[in-house]
Length: 175
Image (cartoon, rainbow, N blue to C red; front, side, top):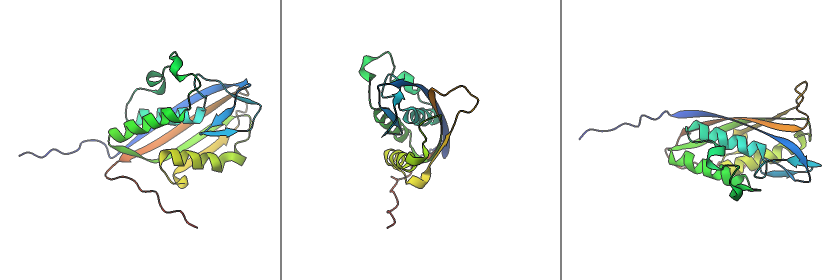
């Protein structure tokens, strides 16, 4: 009987981008964390620019439809939705395609608030959501100098997927 070989690539790369405008009277969520700020990011869901970009990077890596196709802003069902819902669906599809997340690198572009004081908490939350150790999640923040983007936040994300041969076990935490 002939044997079939898995012809899928051993690794896949995905890129995601998202942007949202700051608006008053809504909470600011970035990476699943609510940050103290006088404005939040407008969007049909909770406006979490980082989780949206991660979701698109994951979906793109497996050539799946993007976040807007899966969760259309025209559908009232997604009004105010927690962006972790979108991320979990993308992760489910990644697993069904036979892959798992190896690592992620993200760049945020925004004038305020400063991300530095919250970077470790955001990285830890993103790592938790993806089932990764924190050292597999890179996070940088840049200001939009000269770009006339003082009232917006942007996120750029690159994700590396690897073929899933067995379930990943997070490394034991060092004390």
